[in-house]
Each structure stands twice: as structure tokens, then as C-alpha cells.
Image 1 (spheres, rainbow, N blue to C red):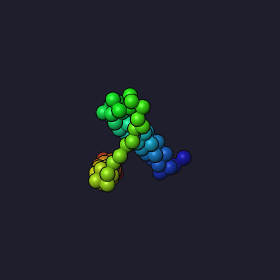
Image 2: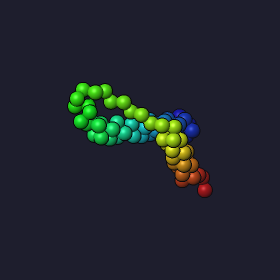
Image 3: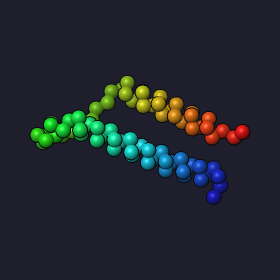
Length: 74
């Protein structure tokens, strides 16, 4: 297996794991915040506005830039 393919596999795996972990923390925080309403049997509705999605996107791009700068060949 070439280094390129290995990097893609490792990057995809790490990205999936980080994404799943972030989603778990987000849902857990929302459940803790809305615990009284959930105890009454109401359904949990997670809502995010456009500004939150833009913030997440910009943060992900900044993180990707930092990682690529870190791994630049000398």
C-alpha cells in the first residue's frame, strides 16, 4: 500500500472517529440541558441555525489548514 493511500485511510478513520465523538458530546450536552423536558416524555429536537453551521465549517477548515501545515515536508 502506498503512503498516499495509507494517509487517506488513516485520515478518514480519524475524521470519522472525531466526528462521531463530537456528535456524541453534542447530543449528551443537549440531553443534560433538556433533562426535565425529556423526563416528561417529550422528544428531543436538536436545532442549529445557519450561523452555527458556518462556525463549524470555518473551524473545520482552520483545523485542516493547521494539520496540513504541521505535516508539510521540510
